[in-house]
Length: 343
Ligand code: PHE
Image (cartoon, rainbow, N blue to C red; front, side):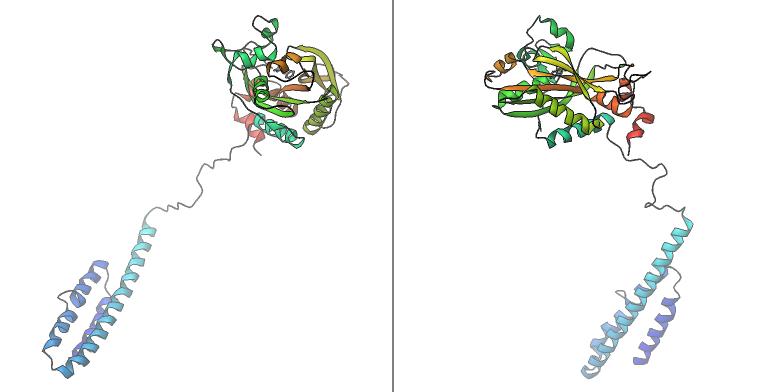
């Protein structure tokens, strides 16, 4: 039986190592170590041997079985590798880890968003916090509480879209100031960024645009504080430059002013300057000292506190900063324009 086993082992080695396919290998496995295989039946025959022989033969048979299984396994992985290689060589190459043919570029912040973010960061540095409110607003917060009762001629300055009176799309972010003051006693130092709506459409006006308004209320706040804050803001946005406060009118501030910044293109000379239409100045927003009636509507005592407010259009600021002359180009989604900001 021993010789028989040696014979089987060398036979297995020969056959297995030259088995050409996985099917043939499987057939050999069944033939030798399968349920009715050669080695399995030898193991079954052990019980017929005398006890002293049985032990020796049993050990020997088990060794042979382990050897045969090892050889089978080795050939199996050889054939598997070969099959994979064949598959890779014959199939068209497909490497899923390669980058796509049309690389997608990473998105970038819209120029208006960039300017807003920058604006907010500057204001946060000097103690203003961000307040928000609804874009679909009540007439009361948008006009009434801002000293602009119904039939007030100043309502014409900010014609907006009505959902169903008294519900409208806010025409400025000043209603956020009313909401903030109703929620908190002074002192207060906030900015209100967001979308606003007006029924306008031309090179410098669109029906929806972005505003940031600022409000500071405390005892003894003066116009000088307003000037200081605006100089700081403009210096950070555009570099230090002179500001001009032109008397103006807003129902919610008294006195009121338009803020002009020295032209960034002609530096105030006004000589044949397209940017400032040769005036030497660029209007950047409106401002003023909060009207006592506004304080009364939020239960602040105008004899005890004072405050300033200002408002700026973000598209306007972005146009000046990036030299864009048609406000509508912010909303046309023309990649030739937007990609200039994708760094
Ligand atoms: N709310 C004004 C507007 O949208 C801007 C402004 C704000 C003016 C605060 C003065 C004070 O036109």
